[in-house]
Image (tube, rainbow, N blue to C red):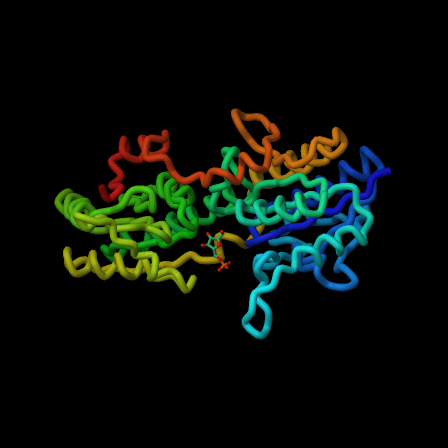
Length: 357
Ligand code: F6P
């Protein structure tokens, strides 16, 4: 009889609890194993005694539709260079491994984005931990999988925000800027921008020229459309001729700001009245979409099956409408950004959406 651990690491997103529920159902219901939840990611293994919760199959009420993660998560720092109170950095990896070993676990399921999966894999290699990874992140930037948990819900929320902005934009003849998350990948902006009918979508992968943006706004004005919806990804870059200008610093404090910078540029060049909405962590919260519940359930079941087959150091992934498994090393080696040649970029161009280039 196996005893397995599960933890959620890095930023939260919708659908994490659906994964936990699926793992518990399959591990206990099908295999009659024990499932130990580790609280607050690797931090729960650093604490003495380790912070854990034992799962029971009859205590999973509402998990499928709960946002966030009941296990908690943390960004307290890289365990290999952990920031201490005195300002120093300390390697605390062995404490985590010792904490893990004290629980007598046969395997660990780690749900995380590329950064968390890389750290978990390093810990697993150092400590001989049988690790299975599950990709999650609203940014959808984990390599080797077409989709990660949380992306669909975040895209739905960003689309709904654009839908709502549409009417107020039209009523006031305003240029409405919606700034969305995604780190250095523009997947949320692109998908939600198309679905929500944006006129302009600015992505980190396609540096924008402010002239092109303003040209689109003027073209709309000429045909009697005096409002405009502009979707902006948080790490966009602007093309100022001889070099690409990183304007990331405006958003680096995580308080938003790139949207405001672009709004000021537009107002100055076109005289249009602009307003900015920074969607922020609203994209990470709330009830998971049906797609994230399905994906979470499928990933959870597949991860447990990998443990049953003793096939470790693997990440479950979605490719070509199927769940497969890939070496974690392969998944973390590539950071999946928007390919300027991909279908959705072509779709946007075909619809006449300005991408700023
Ligand atoms: O990686 C997920 C994400 O939500 C990014 O889209 C965003 O840039 C970042 O995390 C925000 O981080 P924090 O929750 O630490 O503010």
